[in-house]
Image (cartoon, rainbow, N blue to C red; front, side, top):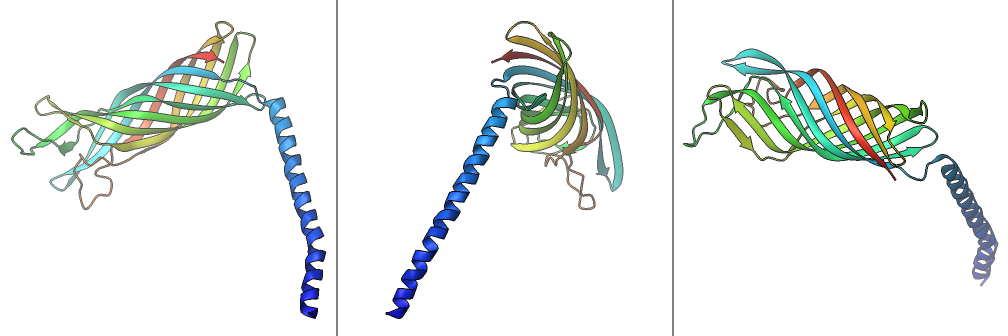
Length: 254
């Protein structure tokens, strides 16, 4: 009986303390939510903009492969291009975040052996003179925008760009034919510094121009290229040496 009474007294003593802790927690959470909402309401613009962008990137790449045990090296320059729809949301004072999705064709002008399939089922040793990847393109970016006057502004952002291929095309050097595959895989991704300008055309429309400077690119493997046991990168799509791009865009402000 004493033990029971002691437990009841303990419960009575702990209950007010537990309620007090919960009230303090709720108060702190409410305070944080109110402050966050107030700051957001004061700093974040209510509306963003929807845009259509057309980028084009000139890239110089290289590939390493082996023939009869000897290492070979190929370099080439090609233009890649695409089309995407994006949404930009300003936040704080002059910063913005952007998401984009669309289509991008990545092309390489590199000579290397690949697995060529003929109609009779044979696999002759053919080489590419170029190859391309049709991709679903997605990107996110964070940047800074500064108004120069009522019509013009400049901006700069860093973007992460991801490619997922659904169609590949390889152009054979030996017989000027092409082979098309419909595999699904990611050829790679890259990060870029984008610097541009924007001009207002009216209350809702504006146009923009930007330059794109990829500073980190990672190309993955493609199983269409031959794999060699003594090389870990024999199937790698390419290694980028240099890239520079431009883009034009049209924006509708919500």
